Picture (cartoon, rainbow, N blue to C red):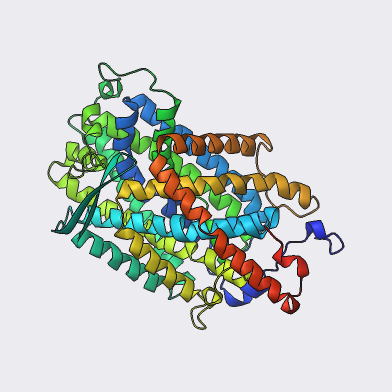
Length: 494
């Protein structure tokens, strides 16, 4: 980049982070991180709530395809950003370069208080739910019923919540041991989970006693088209299952040759995920009647088996639920491990730039890991794990995340204008159409969620806005210390 052209110069240098962090993630580790972080619990659970919303197998499968294509478009768009700015923090870095400190801080704040910790919490809750099918973990000690926005909500505390907190603590401790170890664990768990899903799919198509293509026909009395609002609600559920495709760029400073590795890993990983999800959900509807999918585990049917377990039971009988529970547990642990790794890098990057509490930038001398960021993230995720149901947590996460996904995707346009001569090892295919479509669909999805999920969207927006006073504090603090900064423009306003 030309030193004489400030528009082609990023605001901060990766030199400091490269001396503190270790490039221990290989291309295989990085693809495993993309696939393993995305494939968690949604593919095993979300078909039920989507079927309840849309009322037709074909429409549910269509929602999976559209949500998958949207996520793939996002991954390809992020590929250009990751290659252009291969530094720790991912979206935070892109927003800061494109729009300044204010939007970048609110993104980081949203990730810490809602998206990152909420994702970790919901994965831990899902893990406890799946493990309860194998072990007696259904004790409930406290139950409270309340109403918000006309909705009746139930809060429970028992053995599953305790287990969820325990697994968050465990993986936070593992992540403090070093990125190379975490990368190896991630690759191993990703291979295991893909093998487990392949057994379910193969068993349905080759061994199921009830499978028939007739199950994919719309049930009697079903509406041919329930409306865009309902389709958008179902897409929100599917997008949770596809969520986390943007995690790998958050650890860019710990990836070998990130300019080449990250774009390839994002594209290859999301193609694998999309094909896996569509084929897996097709196998569910192929294996059993639509009514069985509708009545699978969800908020409406909390005690019912997950849809994947019902599908496995059609060829494994009583052992089906136990086998799928093992696959669920492995899949969830892999996603949890990857999430703890990547999400902790965002508050670390913010603190390094002076936009968050200074102790978040502390890196252990032996493992070269931001241990304070990992620890504080684990504590907050544990609080969220005992605060709400699985579907409520995931809706908060997806809604808040897609607001900033859209903003980060738009930074492709901004940075091409601001940094026209910067080296771009990878360019978004179909530019400007692909990122423009992503922006339009993401905007519609956010608008639709506000209208169809007022509670979730209100909570998500409220938590984002709650970061403004804290941002003003850090902005004022940094203005008072500008004499110690090498770049006076580094702390630009909101």
